[in-house]
Image 1 (tube, rainbow, N blue to C red):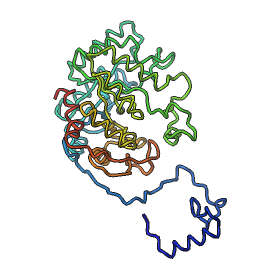
Image 2 (image 1 turned 180 degrees about the vertical axis):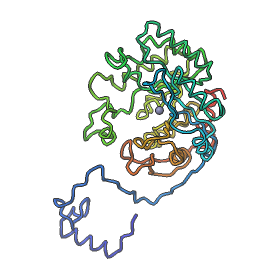
Image 3 (image 1 turned 90 degrees about the vertical axis):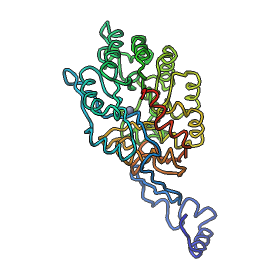
Image 4 (image 1 turned 90 degrees about the horizontal axis):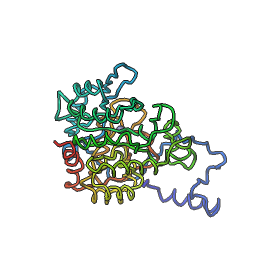
Length: 394
Ligand SMILES: [Zn+2]
């Protein structure tokens, strides 16, 4: 707290007495509130006056597998599809060495020729540092042989060296019967059943992102806790139109999980980070699931007591991930770099209070701050490394 001198304090009391019994609480008696300058929300950058511990964690206490990164993408306008790389391998390796990251999983490895290029650039020269996942060939959905074709592509991807499958939230929210038009394709559409089965048969984990924060399904209005984020990215809103609800999307994914017990599903972004009670029910009911924490420490860290119990109970089923992307400025909570990892390590390892979950002047995923979990070493080892190593068969 800032020191207030006794004289200022007494002056404050007498001013309050003159101005009325409530002056001094919530408004300064010296200022006429009707003349106060309006302050646009975007310009408001309050600084915390708390004097609390600030621990810098430069390296994780144990080696890390970052299970959720995007080092590459598929350039869909090229024929055949080409891979695009967002960074140079040696630049990424330098950050990994400094931050104690043993391995990064590049989820968006794509398919076809792009997948081959991605594996050749990232994984082949450094197989103990990079693992590449493949993705479904969604734009072939309309072909009559698609279900079997897609299953065969999983087998082929494994032969090429792919270590798992990534399914973006595209499934459920963007992919339509005519690819970009027509009704939305459901997450549990039967045409994907051979693919889920092939994944299990090949021993490849499925990393699946379904739905989005609950606030994205509500109107972008004064009650929306992610108003600024949705205002800056109106296309992130799934309110109205023909979008299913958040609940319907998750229930469809759970039906897929239930139908394919031999396939392991990693539910990205903690599955549904605002409702750990519901996610706990999923984990209890379906042993073929794990969760990953990427881009959700803002959610976990604002419910630190519940999150701490969640980590205790599911310590063998939680994977470290960041959703890191090595370029761009739009989503500071995901920009690959040393700062990002230091925040994650601080959140997991320390009991620091009320700190930023992203390296940005304004918290980008909602205006709040987070509290560290101070996990014990046994749990840290599992979350940082062991749980992912088991799935990747390291
Ligand atoms: Zn991601």
